[in-house]
Length: 476
Image (cartoon, rainbow, N blue to C red; front, side):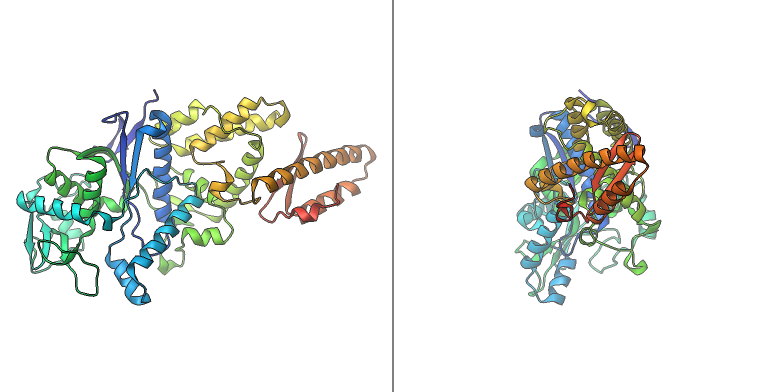
């Protein structure tokens, strides 16, 4: 079996991944707060842990991996959006949850095994809070319940900070009901115009951190294998999760491996609304950038390093993917994944190395021309790309050249015929030195949205997003 090694932020070193139960490998990843469209930072985390999910399924079997990613559907940001829009909270969260699923689907992100919503687990949150109070790790005050940070000596170990440093560097809310500035909210009161649930401390709603602890315990147990998320969540969210979970369930160890992806930049600058470079996944999709291209750009950078999104990277990625899709056009669903691709991903998700290997495989196929390459080699190349979530069915990623399998087959057949015609015209022109027919065919192809590539190896026709098959009628 392939050995997976992951950089564990809990120990700050790369370790061999050994699941508690190989028959049920368990992973929890913090999902979005659903009040608006997913931005590119949200998307990077989704793609990173989707690749890990695919790798775990490949190594341990699809039926032996449980991946939980939550939706936070009770939050002050959601409440504010409802107040400013005048729309019901449930309507907003239902709409934005589907937006998220649609946008991530366009990036080839598989749906996790389970996608719990915070509002479905309020009872479990209340039960965990009661346990923390009983154990002396939490206290009720003025309708609030707070976790006592000083009651957990290991607080700060995950993020590598001391409590004193955290107080000095963090924006902590100093409230009269807090015993200590670092204590954080587990439960807070709700006014009549806000969502609320009955509890031993009055009508209220949960704090942000308790939801992930309650849902992960309910769905994965007191100890599970992997916890992931963006590195901006390490403190305070993940630090607080560890504290409340380990205190409520000391018999367990909570998450054994912690993975955090780095943040995203745009053209070398931090993405922010003030700089005018803040955009959502939907913004890019509506600009005509295919989801597969967005995914490819993400995967070119290791998840543990900051990723810089640039227009040039997107252009280059699209060119590469068009070429790869052309090479793998005849690929079957079943193929053997290249072992070097697997080993690259198994080495702390080294996606850039895996993609470099895909380039090698594609070049090997292209250099020998399609007709001379064994079908099994084409199948294996496609299977290797699919392990990274690339070259998957267009129905999943969105048809960004053709719409539907029938049209795709017909269009590719048409382009293959025209490639042969152009090749013959070119060969004749080389003898007669009259290239007028070649120029005519090339001009017509370009007008129809076809990229024409001619080299010593032959003629290659690649459809672009502007491809219009109707403009090719009668050209043959």
